[in-house]
Length: 329
Image (cartoon, rainbow, N blue to C red):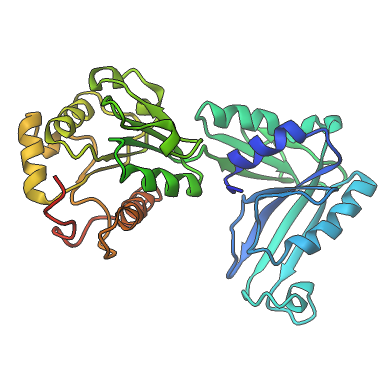
């Protein structure tokens, strides 16, 4: 189960009328906590749990509170204080040392499913949405948009999953797509060459494309990409792709990398006829953090770790310029 709210809602939506459902949302934290305010998950009365609000230590107790919400058809707030010896969180042996408060809300047709289908619609079209939860325990209600004129609301922004575009569909692109899938990212791989980017080699969630570079600027996967990984292992193809990125920069792009050592990158840029400053974001080459290892899986891990840091505004510049082997051509 992937735990981004988009994947949670995609899994829940076909089952929304099967049994009773409850939405649990973290509305505040103090000190150490596994997840922060805005994290959400869904429970059903049959025992289904989609998403996480802790490392698995609170969910069983939350289910007991969920039953009370279903019986009374009302919301309730629950606080777990990991510092207080008399609190249930202490007895559960969590030991995080912080405090977490959650809002529990029944979800049903009678309250328009708390607008969760509309949230899903927005995420499917790559739109962020502001979600406001009514804190009055007498009524479960969610409002989408600006905060209502009342203090009794908890509001947070819900963003679509991260998106990555892999330019080049060789064997080492497969672990990149697999790790991205595990992270819950929306992934596309493109390679116009025959026998590359074959759907059977990649996770089912990965869009496998075969567009010529000249057509990519019109493709949704290209336009929505936040991270781009260039790994054709062919200088001329890498050059054409980077020239396209320079000429038609994707509007959401935050991370761009090119496999191979610096001398190869210089050849690629020369053939593309561009300077590195013409690219919309800094080009990371060699790609990824120096985590050691030279297998495709290790390189995929290093690249996606660096991309992850970039997408979450953490430091991601490569400190060593020579960790990828010179045999990458």
